[in-house]
Image 1 (cartoon, helix red, strand yellow):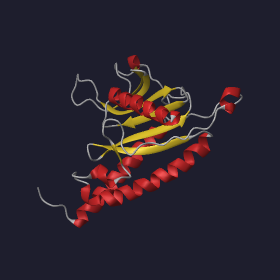
Image 2: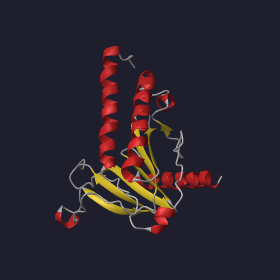
Image 3: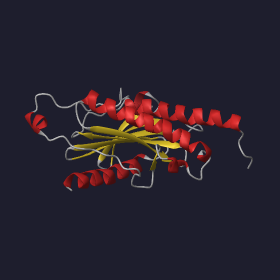
Image 4: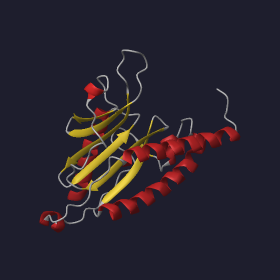
Length: 215
């Protein structure tokens, strides 16, 4: 395998950062967990401190850590990408709590060396989660472009791509899932990880976040 030139690296870095931004915007459409208004229990709840780990259950490493790209095709650009992702994380962690009025944190992780896994944790009992529309599959040839489905103990928005051949079911292009436990809700999305696996990661993450609160 030939070594990429310096000129070739810049487009690669731009592509991965634009890819992370694009998927982040997709994920943002599903985020909406405002603090309950007029709910005494909500008003009296102590604010939780939510901290997303450096590595998710399942081994996904945070994209603001150069180790996430070690040994992969982006290893040479790891420091540059991690620096940009750290800046994005810090910005997001200022915007989310301010906009939602509740404790919240966001962080992006890496699957397969190049693909993003987006995670947000909120102090919320969940529920405010749905795509912009829920089309009837009978009106779209048996498979709508977007589906809201129960997956394990979570709810997932599944966005489908184009079928590779006539008669084949279209693949899931992006999965965004929400899982809640007690006062904490996790939303997790990826184009690289199946919905059931995302729900499993969210379950394990919720357990670790609750364990941290109990200490």
